[in-house]
Length: 566
Image 1 (cartoon, helix red, strand yellow):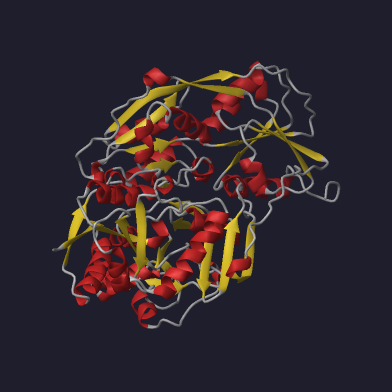
Image 2 (tube, helix red, strand yellow; image 1 turned 90 degrees about the vertical axis):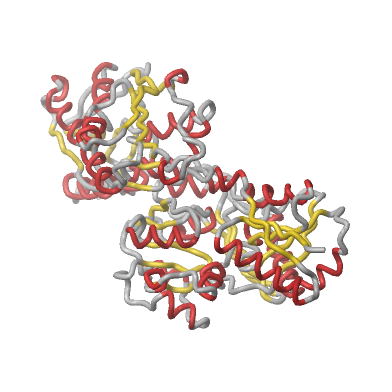
């Protein structure tokens, strides 16, 4: 009788399945691979990082229907709460569990991926490794562990989604979709040993991350084999052929610690066990909120006997906002920008002047063209943090939007998405709609359809720029913007006002607020609106150029800091 071994169809999955089959055949048991498609394979998209376990459960469901006898998985993807009907039969001997940080060929002066794979002892401390990245680099990863721990070391980094098979992700790095990429060494090594990496891939610059300072995902590097618990096969005999007891013991300890932390394969947890010793790093539950404000997320670090690990107790007190002699009043709907700017001796006042209402009937439901290659799927364009909030709200009645790649106008918009659990695939680092359109024309293939949800007060520059570039854009008015109904706050001439859009400018005046001597804005449209609005004619208007937080910090240092105030 031939055992049917279920596997995903990717090159790496087939290599792992073939390794299991080789062990079975060496023990006298005939076996063959059965490539299977799962819901995860068919729905790869913007929120894949919240559904990784669907690959595992999709394959294991075929065990229960009798389509296959065994299934093969990367152990790090296996949920901690396996159904009772599924038995984890064992693990193959673990491959190196390290992560590898990869750079373009013209990157830092370090070894190539080819040389790193040939030299298994070369590695770098995580702090040293991430210091090789330029300031504000785009880091390709959707893993919450890698995102949170990397941003703990370098809070200036911006995670971007680079998805697909390992070879596809390496191609994205070559194409410039990200400044660096993090991948598991085990997958790279298995592909390398089978000759599946080309010369361009092997010529990428790379460093191996030290497991003591950068512990892996629980189970990383191990291949897990599952069977139906009520299988008619002699499961103990099969276990004896495939299981590597040392690997299984380490993986079980890592998964036990992960379960203690209340997480599954998607938790921001790194844990590596070797013998009886463990290294653990776990990010605080609110790590996304910190990252969205460019603060280093809190991380708990632990080393010791694996059985002695105790989950951390995170502080629950609210963070106190800084205060000082000067006041910065902002119409931004969150404190992300001012937190990131990290102004000293300044009291920041959040004064919301706009309300947003999503218009459910306006949103398209047919956004994913089923049965077509993912490369032809539309990209969702996010023109502001407010647009992000409206899209996330719209997911309640248009969930397929989460399957698409998302593109953000700038860092603030990308961070607003990350804070809500979505990693954008592209961030333009643009200042306004016109520069966003120009960046998209340069970055995306001309045949890629574009989806653009807008406010009824949206400026035309983004849409007109894309249409002028003859792009296929589907735009709709997806949300309404209205003035908030708050009483005006006292404003002195010494205050500084930061307005975020032409709509906010109009609302500020309409609500009866006084105008201070200095008004800051971002983007050409906001600057033009300020200079043309009667209420702002006596104010000095200052437009912030470049990354908003840095520009705000520089302006404040030049204009407002001095002996009187510091």
